[in-house]
Image (cartoon, rainbow, N blue to C red; front, side):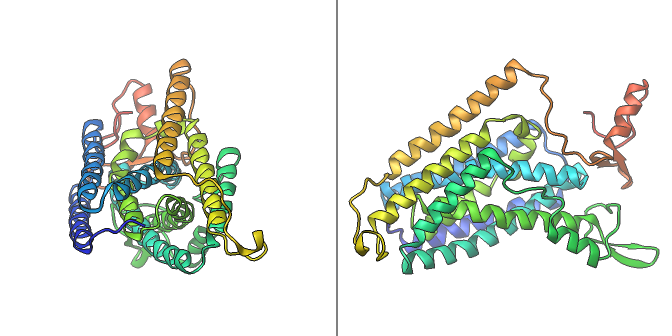
Length: 366
């Protein structure tokens, strides 16, 4: 495990926290739907920031640490694409106003950072005390890869047991009230649907952490590198959501690229477990002299896998540009807010345009 100077860890985490706070303030002080140009600039900013961080780590902690960070960051960034699909399902399924989606996504990202921080501490402790845990991590990642490629890994995020429990036991309105979590209806205080959305996002954050943390521990055992790689992968995810939008659902081969990466890291973890084997029923508790996959090879496999999956998906879209995406929209469609807070269904705006009229005030042009 590479040694990262404590001072560098403190300074870098402090700077990252300040950047996250600035991002949160911007999201809440200026609720809006980011343009393609704005989203692109933010995504590029966070990617460049991650590469700068890797460069600084190279000089203060060495090439091994920097390579592990880049490989871990790319792994988590790849897996975050899967997050985007579920976020789209949740936002459309609960008809979250587009002008409020930034705030909801920001809270979801903060929850993800908290959950992953907890999982990283637990994972690091398990690895330090039980080397055989790599067998379990590896098997779990291979299982996850299979479900990713051939099934629905996370199910319907808008209709989980936790969401149903919240609906039954909490007083929740049917309508949004701007960005408020609580509102008053007929003199009675009630929660708005935003609470249910946050519960759904929080639950999926936990599921994604179960996948991503074992995956990145297959790249590095350093908790600091693991956590910073997760932070940089999640930073800019909000802007990536608006940049890619429905395109995520049309990149149909991405899930196979992600599945291959998970399976590859799963195999790598099992090989590492065999190399460090201490289980008495395997080779008499002795280490096995097996081939171990290095970080450099892992980095190359991750990059090539995502590049091939993305290019294949784009070629597929180009050949069939009118291919429909999955219908994950709620029956009344996504809604937007008028300046006075009234919500306007997207299909209402479309109907008005189709009849030769103007879309209702506040509805965005689609």
